[in-house]
Amino acid sequence: MATGYEPNIEGALTVLVDLMQGNGFTMTRAPYAPNYRGLVDALIDLKDGFPTVIPFRVGFDATTLEAVSAGDALYIRHADGLVGKAIASGTLDESFVVGFAETTKGSGQIVKVLVTGLIAKTGLSAGDQYFLSAASAGNITATPPSTAGQYVVSVGEAASSNELVIQLEPPILLS
Image (cartoon, rainbow, N blue to C red; front, side, top):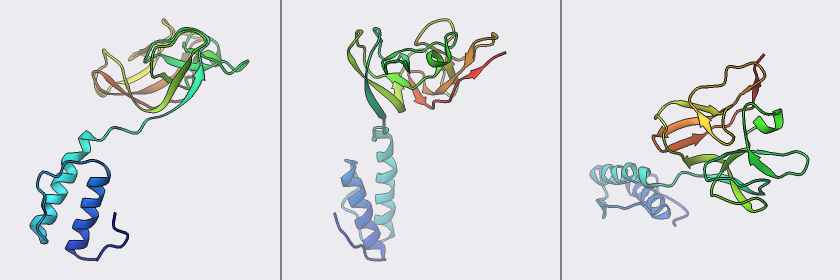
């Protein structure tokens, strides 16, 4: 990658090419002419490359206190730091979602807990907000709990029918 860029069209093209090469973009219109047409072609290739970029996902490894399935909402048990399936009708600890299981694991195994990014989930409605379920541990629902003593926990928004954008919020106790 170049370290210094000229303040002209050729410099801008060099920046764009470096950016696209560094991120594995396909440059279908290359080589780019050193003029405005070339700059526009490079920008179009840059724009076309964005949908192919894998969204950044952040997580941590934790030991499970029970079997969990890929996509389960998880909490951390404060007594020992183990993770289990969160539920909105449980205790404050059990309703505090720290992330989602990346894969299916048995009790006592290490699981990656995703705290940001996209997670595969089926049966979603794009654009809908999702909440921790009060009826089934580890599950989410588009309908927030409404019963006193349960917690409302927003966990994200559906990007599509099979992907959730993780957006964790703290639990709110209903009275």
